[in-house]
Length: 426
Image 1 (spheres, helix red, strand yellow):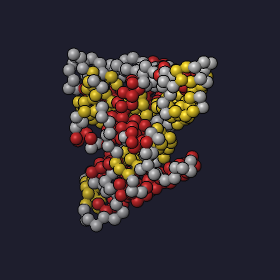
Image 2 (cartoon, rainbow, N blue to C red; image 1 turned 60 degrees about the vertical axis):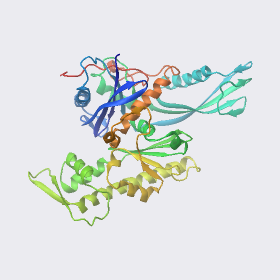
Image 3 (cartoon, rainbow, N blue to C red; image 1 turned 120 degrees about the vertical axis):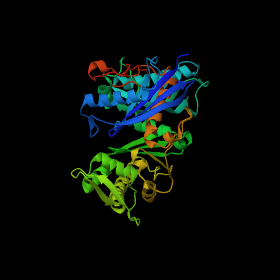
């Protein structure tokens, strides 16, 4: 019996991460995983299509090198942080001239109408949920099997992005995807679903993504995304401070950040750390205390300003929000910084935790991969794709990527994609 394989790819500004899965009975088993330094993207913008294509091609080759040569096709799911997520509320009313029993198909038609409307406006729906049902002026939790005499009114929560938000991915994959359909999702939204439970979302959790280029927040309320905010300062500014003070490269600064730095204002331990500089052939040295202070100063500034903006936006939208009452889950590359949790606690309160995989569709995930926070977004992409497949029969007119039309079409996200066999391809 032929096996089904999927590759999830998160195209980040700093790193591109990927996982190869084997799928069986709606469950996924990890076969391999890896990452590559992203080339061709600068400041969040695509600058070199050839370089980003080579990054993707090389990573896919690494992930699939141990697969049988008979494995001719693999489903490819991809994602990118758009920084332009929007959340809208839609109201829709169906009027009846006679008694009518409400069936599931009626709700499907309503959802189809909303999707069609957004599609015509060149908006790509990433998440859609019913939030309220009114049958003949009475609020019900589920309208199915109720008999309506006059009308059915529903409210929907819609998370969407402009088609143009995925132009970078469209350009990057046009030489890789063999057909013109490719599932694509926003990685911050995907990671938020991967790291939170349904109970977290019902409680109003705030999800924080400490990314390379920016920090992003998604606030949930009553189980659905209610607010999205991007703060345009991320971990690259921590790396920039390290490179400036120590006169080293960004790659070396990243190594120092991950392997040695601790987010502390003062360090009593006397320790020298070796590193490579830009100009000197020999190794240079810095103290643990200096490295820690560089990291602490910038990380604290980013979290403080991010929290301030987030609080203002929440207060501005609704007085009932107040502080981050539902708690905080933090993820992203910045979550790997040692002792960052103490700075988060200092500035955002005690009700927080580091994100971890909360999805049951993944089986036997290696312990070492579970600890690698940067791959959480890839798991989220697979979950979002699985969720979209479940709703695939109910939602029509979903937009498709057309890589052959010079990026004039955006990404669709409900279709299977077969990519060209890349092993040993020049």
